[in-house]
Every structure is written in C-alpha cells, then in structure tokens.
Amino acid sequence: KVQSKHFNTFFNGPNIIRVSEQMEETTQKRARELTEELVEHIKHTLEEKTGITPKEVIKGGSLGQGTAVDGEFDLDLVIITTDITLDSLMPDRDSEPDFYRWVKKLKKYIKDTLDPLHCKIIRVTRHAVQFIYKDEINVDLLISPSVPDPFKFYQYLEHLTYKQQKSFTVCTSKWQVEFISDKPPEISHVQQVKEFIRKAKKWRNKEWQDSNVMPPKSYLISLLVLKAFEEARNLNHGYTPHATSVTRQLQELVRGHHKLNVHWDSSNYIMTTSGLGPTVTLPPSCQGTRILDPANPFNNVYRSGVSNSSDTKDVETEWDLIVRRIDSLDLTEPDGIRRPLPRV
Image (cartoon, rainbow, N blue to C red):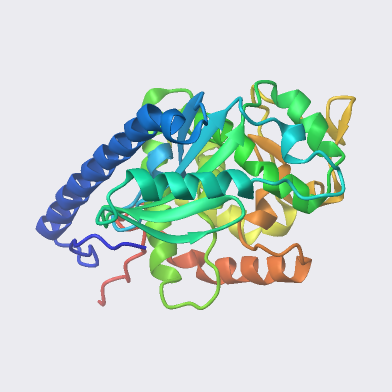
C-alpha cells in the first residue's frame, strides 16, 4: 500500500489527535479528487480507445464505500458494459469465466492513455489490472457484464462450481456499494457506522501490521461493524448507540463466531431456511456458520473474508487469530486501539 505521511494517534494528547485528524481529512479529500479524475477519464476515453462502451463505472473498495483510512486508499473501479454477457464469458459450463481477454484490453488502454509517470501497473490478474495512480491511490480496474436482475443472476450462479461463482463476484459490486451506503437508513447513522468501520480498519491494520498471515478483509470488517451497530441500537431501544456498546457487541460477535448466522433481507433477495425463496437453493458453503454477502448470497463472507482457501481448517485458524486480538479493539478511540489503564 502507498502510505500517506501523517502523525500516529497513539498518544491521547488532544492537540496531536486534532492535527492527525485534520491531515487525514486533507489526504482523504485528495484521494476523492483523484478518484473522480480517473473515473471521468475512463468515461470519456474508454469507448474511443477500446470499443468498450461503459454503461456505468462503479466506485468500490474503501474509497467508493466511504470507509477509507489514511494511508490505505484502495479503489475498485468496475466498468459495467452491455458489450459482455454472462454466456459470452462462459459459453461452456465446464470452463472458467474468461474475463482475461477483456482485462488485457484494459491493460493496453491504461498504458496508452495514462501518463506512465502518473500510473504504475503492479500486476495483471485474470480479473483485474492493478496499478498505483499518481503515487497516491491503489486501483483495481475490473470489468463486468451488465446484470439488471439480481434474482435471475442468482439462479444462474446456483448451477456453477464454487470457483466459477467466485469469478462472478465482480458482477455484484454495484449492489455491495449500495448496501453499505444505504444501511442503516438514517443518514446520521450511515455516517456514524462508516466512522466505526474506519476505526475498526485502523485497529485491524495495527494488529496485523507485523503478521505474516492475511488480515481480515475490509468487507468482512464492514459487515461485522454494521451487524454490531444494529444489535447495539436494538439494545438501546432504537436510539443511536454509544461507541462502547458497539465495541462490546462486535467483540461478542467475534468471540461467538462459530454460531454466526448473519444475513440481511435486502432489495436483492429475501432469505428462507434453505435458500432464496422456493427456486434457489444455496450450496453447503453458504449454510451453517455464515455471514452472507447482502449483494450475493453465494458469497459467505465468514469464509471469504478471512481466507482465499476453501479449507475449513484455514478459515477456523484465521478466526482464532481475530478472537485472540479482539480485546484490543475500542471504537471510542480515534485509531480503534484500546488504551492501557493508567497506573494507580
């Protein structure tokens, strides 16, 4: 990650905290400006240079969802186009979706239209071009077919393998961003939840900074904080909960993770006991212990949020690490890190 220059907030002095927050807001504003600059460039030049017509450019990742923390500006830009269909990506149900031939076009487009002094390509995967823009934000540029009907999309996924389903996760980017932006519905709560998510991410970054294992992914952090906020608000009879209460609920969710059965009835789907209504049955990997992606019920974030492996032992190992570290979380603190009690 590209690190922004700023003061840490590991001291409780109010002046240091205030300076750090001001600098963070400055760098956040700069990152948002660069994001808009890049999106406008794509909208105005992509079709001419590649023949790909962008129906929409979805801003995902922490910058798109409004939960970025200073020094970790990651941006997922997903180009939605009608030039691609699900069947054209995978004409044979025994094959893997072929996003790569479109990704190669995006790589050439970036090289041809962006100043090499301002854009450094880090790597190209089967699904994305990853680059650093103007030495300040990390960008994953992806492409997706337009999928207007979520339920038909879920019916399509039902008959695919786990690996094939993962490849099509990019198609749900727009719904993910909409869910994080719309939950909870009260605007003041949206901003408060996002602030708690940012603090939880700072805690995650600090706790895993010297670790050689993969930290919990940002989307998992976001969903856990949202669930903890909802439970804390319910305990507070519907009133805005204090950060202490949200911290406590989040810690309890993590400690009791083996019993988690988290899902939201969203505008995209309504859960039943076995799946989505009478016609779509979820695979075993999305039943039992789960945190279902509100944008994609075939994505169990309880698993995908801690490990790229489908091995249950790997998932349990990663959750055990979170449990061991969760006591240091404190959402009342600017950086999400619990302060030691003063000596008497």
